[in-house]
Image (cartoon, rainbow, N blue to C red; front, top):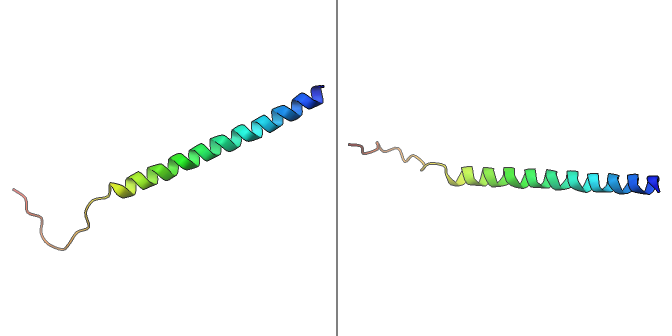
Length: 51
């Protein structure tokens, strides 16, 4: 009985670890995508008009 519980605990730990890794990967990709979308305009070579 104890051996069966240890096996289930090991499987649950592996599934939990995989879920955490997937969540971190998803979050990092979202962060990279957000930063790419917020990048400033590409400079055209003209002087900016400021007051």
